[in-house]
Amino acid sequence: MGASLLRLHFHDCFVQGCDGSILLDATPTIDSEKTALPNNNSARGFEVIDMIKAEVDKACGGKPVVSCADILAVAARDSVVALGGPSWEVQLGRRDSTSASRTTANNDIPSPFMDLPALKSSFQKQGLNERDLVALSGGHTIGFSQCHETADNIDAEFARERRASCFAGSGDANLGSLDGSPTRFDASYFKNLVEKKGLLHSDQALFAGGSTDSVVKGYAGSNNGRSFWFDFASSMVKMGNIKPLTGNSGQIRVNCRKVNA
Image 1 (cartoon, rainbow, N blue to C red):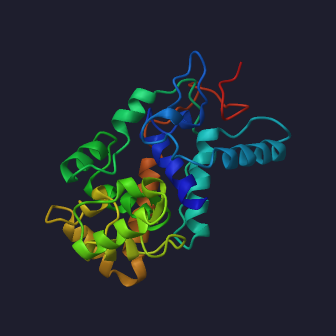
Image 2 (image 1 turned 120 degrees about the vertical axis):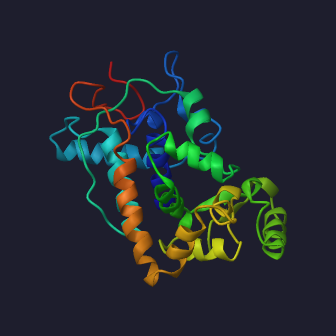
């Protein structure tokens, strides 16, 4: 579940800031982000967050002391570490939102079909620069993607192989690994991009003759991905600071899936 938990934190932070809004179920007053196009039948790991929340509250005397937003941030970091990636100090103190926005999720979560200008604009909207874009995209070194999202801007032979493996089974519903080692956090994602073997259009757009080519090359050629690791950790801290609710704003939910009564 490591890649899924990392993705939950990412998708949370890009909508209203890092406030746990992605975890809220739909109600007459909550327009759940779970049914937004980037998340519907795709975002996973909600039950894992529920389990973590229950254990954390148990350790805190049965009281909701730690927010669901903070749990998402820590779970993302620990997932990366568990899969062999870098660690970083997670800044804590976020509170949980009392609202969600399916419309904002549809508009602000980057699409796998975006080109480089659109990606840069999406990240700039969140206060993240080009290097953050490339480093955080490196999170695709772990996990899988649905076949219908496979890029059309990649090496022709690789594209034929991907299509053959996808449609040999259940077509678009099949999953393809985002790089050759989907359960290991390494720099192979960037090496694939240099070889024009990025699985998603938005991945290969990072190495297609544009302004991010040099960053991709640097990460692909770094000593066992060390420069990528350093920048990824730094960018994760930066992303985790997108518009957090603090002080008396929001609440600390008892149940991550619904607003406190």
